[in-house]
Image 1 (cartoon, one colour):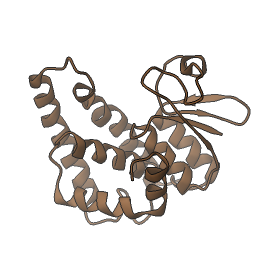
Image 2: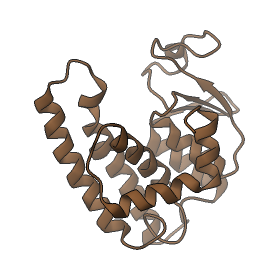
Image 3: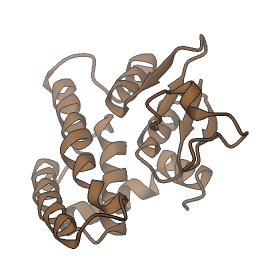
Image 4: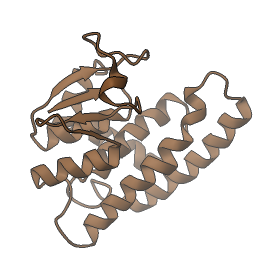
Amino acid sequence: MILYYHAGACSLAVHIALIEARLACKLVSINRDKRTDDGRDFIAINPRGFVPTLELDDRTVLTENLAILAYIAHQSSTLLPAEGITRWRALEATSFMTTELHGNFKPFFYSDATQAEKDKARQRLAKHFASLADQLGDKPFLLGERMTIADPYLFVMLMWAYRHGIEISQRLRAYFARMKELPSVAQALAEEGLA
């Protein structure tokens, strides 16, 4: 498999999940000009032009974090329970993060965003993070004692929150610190030059 990624982007969640699931992959970095680190046109690989993009061994290309994370869980029989409500809560939480959290960071990624747009996004993000802090409670991972596909994504969203001055609770700060110490997270951060 090949993971096309941009350092520190949402593709980091897939990178962490691949390591956690012990699935081997080659890493190929994508720059802002949509070129691979070896000079290829990324749009020829993924016409949508977004990371993460996962190219399977048969050259099939998967896109979108939720789909890729669910694929990794299915291939490895880890990160997503086979049945029960925790499976659905993991998909629910990951979907919430891909839409409500990730989407609300948009003003911070565009230079033409106004301060009013950024302030409104900060308010929404703080509200959404507070909801996830309540869901986390005193558990080590968002949904219990074991990591699910929701945890790598939440880690990335918290990393962005720190970068952009979004208010997060002490509970989420402690969770972020614990996640950062996990071998899979530390390895992914190091491999992306973020350690």
